[in-house]
Length: 456
Image (cartoon, rainbow, N blue to C red; front, side):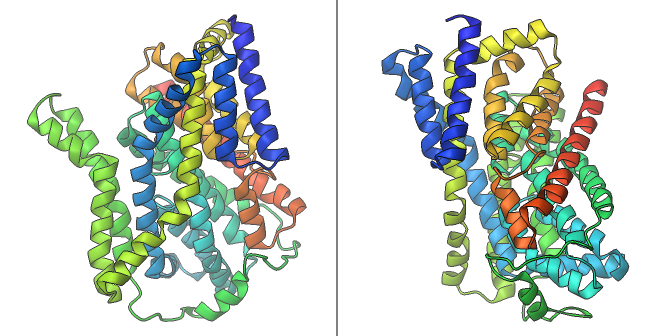
């Protein structure tokens, strides 16, 4: 097929996918499988190879994602169940002072957001946001908005979150380097989000009740004007920070160690094993199992129940991520990736700009940041493979994809509804605050990434 025909076919497939998900309210998992199958047939992939191509796409994606997502969710659930989020936020507040409560909770959300998914993290932190707003006597939006932006930045850029992990596997980005570069950039984005949110005139916004529960009531039951109401055996902030930093340090040790050793040697192999995301997160989960379980005085059965309780919540995430891998795999097998690569070369658009723009457009159109990241990675994989880019440059391309998926969170995004409903915002006020803030955060992240690209 001609380049034009392939690109039109890809555009039609994406539009149909959007219609199925947005208008027909079809499950994203089913919609992506259906569109992938029809796209494969329309692109003249041999009939006997279409299903195998889909299986390969699913297997390749979940092979790198399922264990990491599952272990990350389990680690987050252990911390949540032990009251670690509350004590961490309280400690940051005591260190920074009551007058810096917004900065304190935002800083706590940055640490918690590394292993915990955006939606889970925000739901965990919503009562904390209202609690510390209650302590400081300020509008909860002044805390909730920068917290949400911080969590979302980490969710789209840093492993072990599903989008970055799966897309990194697709485009060949080193997860360790992605973590080391992504974390400080996200930290700057969090600071900018904090400063930007302070400029919003939120005191005039009237917050309504939440259909998902009443965080205000939860706050008043857990907090008092002096801080968090004491909770028996609550896990301390030092333990929480240790459990989050340990896997990051282990991954970084492996990545740096491999740079300093010769490939093929025993030392290189051992460091590669110890520094893998799966090994690092499994280590952290085991440490949490023993340390937190002992602190909380959980029985062995209770420890097992806490670990298992995290998995049902991420089942949808895993399946949708896998379906995104199927769609990306069909895009590559059909030759659409090669066609797009050729067009980008002719347009002379830098690939890092293309990564951001395509991801941002897909994010705005269909809502899911993970789907936008996976689809963009699938579209650009051939361009990246043939571009001769360094390991750092590929990581920066992956970060540009992630920051594109951060912006323009609106009514098509489930995260938009989580933020607005939990914070008691109307749709209009949500668009004026959260949508604007997410877009500013995405643009800032991309500008920082572009600056690193110029230096790479």
